[in-house]
Length: 90
Image (cartoon, rainbow, N blue to C red):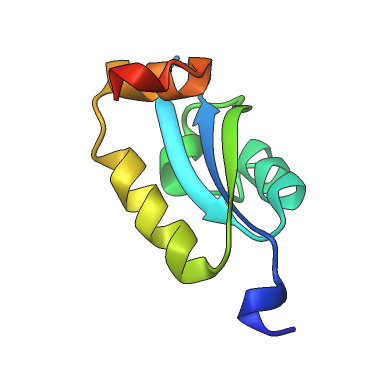
């Protein structure tokens, strides 16, 4: 399948220790399951369980990666505003 036909998602997870993890996937349900089965990112393995708290679609892997980086640069407060839909604080 070509990259532009995949449904890329940028997502934020709330970890068991209340920290936030940002990532991308083209199969979000499978990716969250992997995180919760300790097959996801090293960061989340020690902070289970994880819960999806935010997601947005991206046109391509490249676009998703760029958005992921932009979200990772936000402060925790800004990420919480994004999650709650209060984007005027961003």
